[in-house]
Image: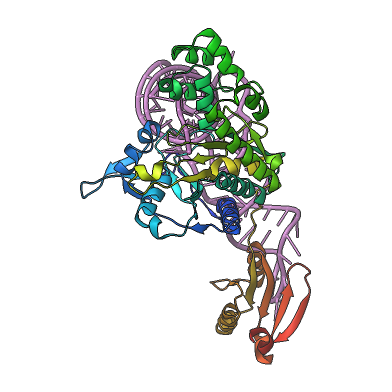
Length: 425
RNA sequence: GUGGGCGUAGCUCAGCUGGUUAGAGCGCCAGGUUGUGGCCCUGGAGGUCGCCGGUUCGAUCCCGGUCGCUCACCCCA
């Protein structure tokens, strides 16, 4: 087979494959700009240190890292947020707040590939920096939702599940979970629904929860909505504060007409350590695919990377799972080629004139193709058809002598004779 | 990193419990004469049957290893 095979987990994008990816990235960019976000980018290769302490163990274990010829340890970027943090550390002070930035970089991870998870993908990142108000949380959620709506998906297809880490931590505290045990409890809760109830109970028991505490913790996730939580734990100041934030977030999304797309779900935790407040994930409604999108508020990260303290909220959405969902719902655009004109010459004598005509058409912005080698007229028409030509310009000795060309409309088959001046302007 | 399934032309797949020149459809290329596409007809190219080794008189078919793909686990950006 091929002597030079593709690296595992990497994709080729021949034209018929590139179409879907471009469709997705184009939609992302349109929606970003519609919300007033500006695009940025950074280097695909970064110093390894940028990730080793900020990104958490899982990411570091899966880094594509190596030593370069200058003896520097470098890594292909596995996520964009550290680069964003560095860029902002340099210039955030001079930027008007809030900062609305987006990007769609190609990211890399060294991990065995599986469905929806390759070693390389394109990830849409949208962030609002410099705004603590929960309106910013609602805003980025709306961008994520609109990104999917722009591609034809509806509330029948996907849903955003929204939670709040501060709220969950406060509730766990009320249930008797010690502060140092909260991260472990987060991990256990994150797995709710993905593994058996016994397994979760065992995990929670391991961190020192007694039977009653355990039952109370689990009851938090059994259909507990914001109203139920408020009535039961509302007297707790931290719970009340974060609950107000969550409630307001839903009110804002409702006002934006997106209530059908969001639901409160305390089991959403997210793996990354740096999230501080709102966290959310977008899933397909059938639950067949892994999360389409994940994000949240990370108010401490930018100062950890060496900048000023700056609150931030954002999300990442990958192209791989999304492409699968679009294909399943038959929302992927069909592959097609198209060219405005294909010039057919009857004989080699007409080629110079054909090239002059092509020049004029292209200068006016039309796309033009033609056979590069002399071929039969039949073959040229066949190629015109294969290339999706809307019109064919036919140029033979008779036309050349008369200073005209024949133009055939490929869809209707109708032909007309027009002068060279008329065609070339 | 762990485990399961798969690996035959560019693509989708056949190949009857191992037996001589490995097939089909689609795609591609060339024709169906002299200035016209999509349909149709004819022909052609293209495979060391992923790779290495073993069993056997003989292996695409059985066994082992390896690589790749894939699904799940782990974990999740």
